[in-house]
Image (cartoon, rainbow, N blue to C red; front, side):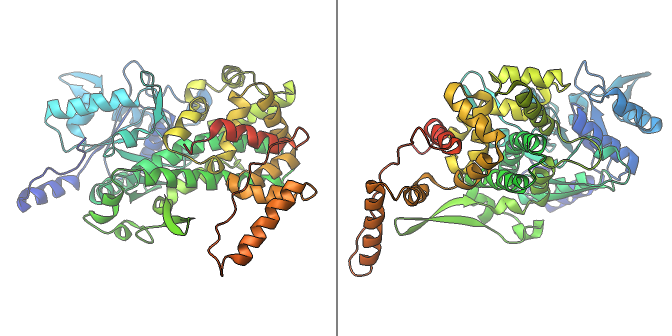
Length: 508
């Protein structure tokens, strides 16, 4: 998919003319849910410089995503202006804007639907661009979620399937964008640095209180947004269930953030256009605001250093802030919807003394608490989590926290019982946090040290020490450690780790 503000012309005069047109560019939001509606309200409230046009989804009310309480707290004049932005005049009649109208009159169109509609919206927008001869309209999405193909039964992030699709997002907590003194940071990401730069410039202009920075890592940004939806559920659970054991929360939140970043860094390594991102850009990444051109992680593989992760995207400050913000409880207002789903999980597990029997029961718990399951992208992602880890080859120790949450909600029988004990007992959870982040091979040594009374453990440690002593004189390879078989009397966190590693292994 071609997605640029400019055509392939080498004529300087026409390019300069296009640049002048972009100084007066118009931005369009299609499908007005809670997030784009709040952005538009902020733009009206702060009187931004870039014109903004809205188009609700056919059959939907412009303000339908907002609760009655939220609407009652809005300024009536601002609401009137929002409705004006969503309509235009045809002849003597006032009609509601459509996606067709946005493509005709905007230079940047943000497709704002969630994962339920975004793919069909993208297909329709591309068709309209060709039909209307508006190929220089750039398309972006807000959907920070995993898409699912029912035919092939696979899950993925849309920007990987459409690598030139722009991704725009940042941290948004319910109500914050409707506060006249609050501010908002976001990233606009497109794999071409110039497109990212101009797109961010246009979106930055819609409100004085919205600061948008460019980036090239659209795939990574969309993945981390999708992953943090699940992490937010775990964070909400932690705040609600372990509120009186505050020592566990910093560890829990740190691991949830770190593992989101590590997973996205693994996904980054699999990009087909990864080298192009860094070697064929029209301007250097540092000109976009990146501190350094590249941040890579390596692993020692038999004496050779292999690149295993690309953390360059982690310089997208707004995206990282989004993960942090979504996993904390605010001092005022409500936390994110996925965070609240985690709170519902904690209260329900306390009440019933068990995990949910199925993900459908968890969804019903959420519905009963006033959270519509259609808006809980994190819950939807948990349903397909094994597919996601397999597709992106996410290592078990890089996703141990979400693996545990998946077991609680989607597991069965004995494995759920162990997961329940880990989630609900502070000591078990802290042990799990410490041990599950280590690669399985490295934990074998710790297991040996904890079982030195057993002859086989003593034998393996002695062999390792002898090999270490002989390494300088003789090229002796490190001895292969035997698998440590879980015992019936092992703590719950070890039993849960073993069960998860057996079910979620993606190394093959």
